[in-house]
Every structure is written in C-alpha cells, then in structure tokens.
View 1 (cartoon, rainbow, N blue to C red):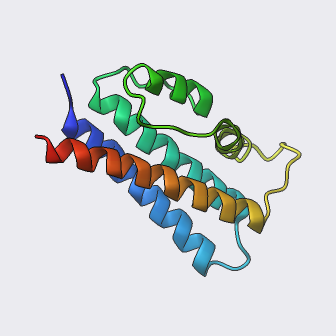
View 2 (cartoon, rainbow, N blue to C red):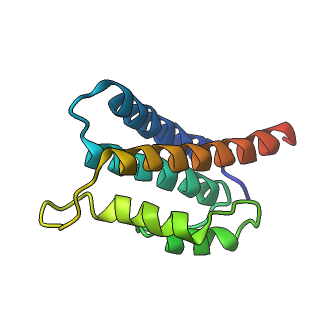
View 3 (cartoon, rainbow, N blue to C red):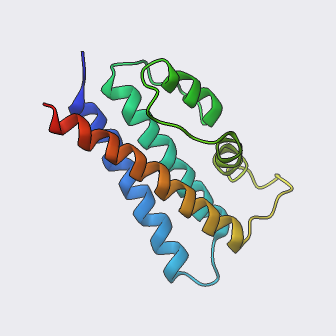
Length: 135
C-alpha cells in the first residue's frame, strides 16, 4: 500500500521550511545562522519522512538522521545520504534547539545546511516524480 497524499503533505511542509531557510539566508542580516540550520534540517527530515509516509511506514518521532535513514533502508534503496551529512544534519536538528549548547552557529554552517538540505529535498522530489510517472 502506498500513500501518495500523505507523502505530498510531508513534502509540502519540507518545501516551506526550505523556502524559509533560503529566504533568511539571503535576506536577513545579521544572519540567524542557528535558525537557518534548524529550518534546513527540518526540511531535509520532513522530506525523508515523506518517503516513509509514502510506503505507509511508521514515522519515527526522532530528529536523528541516522535513525531516519535506517528506517528508509527498510522501504527503499534509492535514497542515499552520506553518513557525514546525516551526522551534521542531526547536529543542526538538535543543537539549535537549546541556548545552553556550547556551539555557535555561523554563516558557513547555514550555507552548508541549506545546500545539503536542498540536495535531500531534490532527491526526494525526484523519487516522487518517478512514482507519479508510474501511477
């Protein structure tokens, strides 16, 4: 069973987060790097969860990209995220949430987050383009 409607809802939210991150990166000075990193991680995470939703797989309530990717491997071998990228996106997802974290996020982090997230969202969009073409 496939749930294309639920997948599209997840992907639409991912796109909104991605657009917001890109807008902040381009237009807001001083740059809120931690917010851009957070929104970018959310876009990537939601797009990956869209694939799980499509396969009617239980969506894990986690922000750990390795855990999400482990779940993805159970439903498809098409989506591949490098381990280093997964680790970094997890840092962006988790360490931007708390002010007591010792890490300061900088513009370089924000640019990396947007770039990697855009790649992941595009990978998932291409995945669904091929699914829609076969239905």
